Length: 304
Image (cartoon, rainbow, N blue to C red; front, side, top):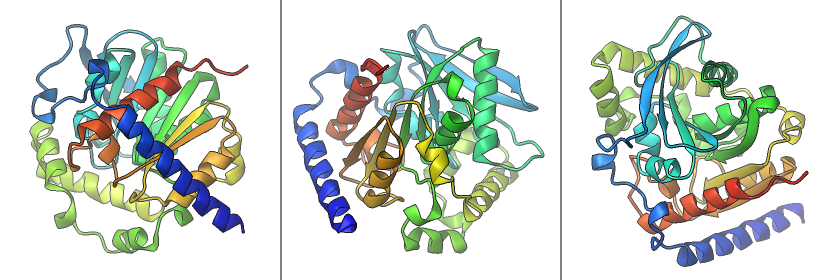
């Protein structure tokens, strides 16, 4: 009976989200996605970039726009622009976007320590302290969403609201085909767009391969987060998933039920379609709907 209820709920969420796509089309220019072919070359006049020494890491970051801080954390194997290139500018019109590149990714060189979502969360916290930011919204995609969950758990005093996009908190949340793929990794199957973007930034093929190996090893040994820790997240959360994502819709509903102050949207499409991640088609209506729903969530008054 519980499983039947979850399936009914998923279908209801999909219906509501599809209706939202119709209503929230691209008529509002503040939610228009950016063409990835020009995203890197059209920095806002108020944008800055730099490196911060955090926990022994020289972390690269960019700041775009003004307002309430919103941290963007990219997915595994990615950079700021491969994950968020089509939505960054739209968010920077409303918030102070702080986009980062994590250990071994993009501009941020690797160092001799394990990759972990807990360490990534601590690095983000150290960066915010370096920037004299006491509290921020955190938006993570895929691996970045796993980091976002850890940030909310480990640094609740620094967490305003979180957007958790395309991830799972336990291995059982992903279908069997995903773990089968992870058990037989091949560098050749890494998306070429990821390789190309990495090498534009860091012209060191061994560093690219090392990053791939370390990302794969982290996922192969993925540690479940205890349900009680997820349930203990106090920050309001917006859980976003595709109906053909690396996590199942049923798992998205489970996370929604665990996190007390959470919202859930399940979009039609695959991993990152709803934000126009670089390996996905650019569906402007879908991307604009995601931007609009996310802004609505961030702008809602927080219940006391």
